[in-house]
Image (tube, rainbow, N blue to C red; front, side, top):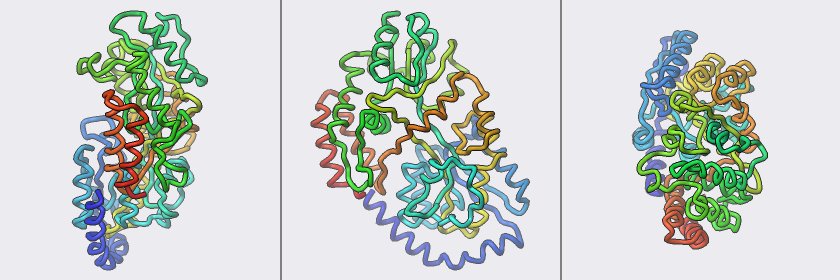
Length: 419
């Protein structure tokens, strides 16, 4: 990633050196019309989200008849490799999608336009999501979606086991007690599932009072005592209390499929599962705020639309980004498609979102926002994430204790990752 960062920097020097010739772009657009290129990864063509995005674009073009939009959707696995090549080559789309984790790398390298003065009224955006795409006092993007993670539970299994449904006061201990009772219902029934991954670990550390970075984000704190304790506890669900199935136990079945089969009492996963579970769970299910240990902490996931630093039409591009991300017309289509959470505070949009069932307790999605924690971010995001995940795998495999693995992780991060 350090090499990539240098290549990106050198390329941007060359690309931005010719940027002044684009200054007349907005004036040209006003006279003759313009076509904007939009590239993104989150709205698949074959899904309701893809149809919703096309509807958003059609409405934008209707309201802005001199602006046409060319859409290209690229699968997530290939998206960032292609995006990096396009940015380095100076031919990035006018507007493109970035997730929160990769935003800093592009903003810090001058790949994005400062759109602070081009956004107009932004009071309708959720402030947490909107401010996430402000880098060093400059607004480089607007959030187009906002997701978090909750506790899903199978009401039928809870009823059979005679257990009260999860509440906002639940902790890890409550999960463990309920799981053991649920598992008594049969040999192939499991209590709980939560992946042991980078995203789950940074959140689990926070739920135990820890963090992977200092509050000023200038130092790694991966091997803090609270983090070691959290890692030991989380892996213990699989290796000690055995309330969580191993990969071998699931025999190739994913955790969503296990839940949908009716053989998993609880699963920690994202609200993007709503549509799938609604269509494919032959039992009643609901959600609750995810329990913590010493405190609550929930995920922050957000994607944004940003404007390329080399766009000839920054004003028109910013207008498109704001419309797709935050207009009432666009967010209404997003809600109807059950496409994550619109990053807005319009009462009618929120009420529309809450009215869709299941889950019955959809208000837990918004209640969870009070406990958001952001992941650690670096200009070397991919390399940092890979390092942390590699050491988590050592714990998961039983090759190292949590302390040994996280001490080694801390040393490797300090040696290889810039903050």
